[in-house]
Structures are given as structure tokens and as C-alpha cells.
Image (cartoon, rainbow, N blue to C red):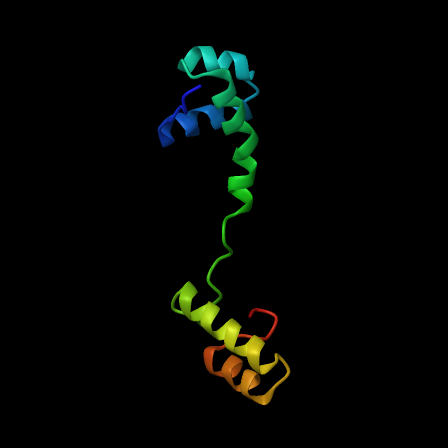
Length: 97
């Protein structure tokens, strides 16, 4: 069977209808999308939500800077003096990193 590709708008509609309690077979018929495609989209919707990255900690301008500091502090050891001075400089604590 050929792969079925659906647009992001259709995926959003499928997930919304499913969360409103509509059955997969009804969604499939209404949107003219194969049952298995609807089922796959619904089953993987939660996994997409779980993969969202946390917000950028305060004191950092972007995620790259936060990751750079986190890796550096991990390499130096989170209890080192240098890690403490980095935390004071950017205005965060070790738990945030």
C-alpha cells in the first residue's frame, strides 16, 4: 500500500476531532482519509506533545547559549567554583542548568 501524506491542517483536524470524542472511523469517513492514517495520527499525537522542549531559562538569550553553558558546567562539575561564577554571571542557579 502506498504511503498517504496529509497536510498539517488535516492532522490538526484529526487530533481535535479525536480529543472531542469522535470515533476514528467517523473521522476517517468525514475527512476522506484512510482509517489507518487517522489511527496513526491519533496514536502519535500525544508523543508529539511530550517532545516539546522546555522554555529558555531566564538569563539566557537563546537555547544554544543555555545548552552551551549546561554542557560546560557538566564538564567542569556542577559543584565547581567556575560553575558557580557562571551561574552568578547569567543569573541562574545550578538546578536551572
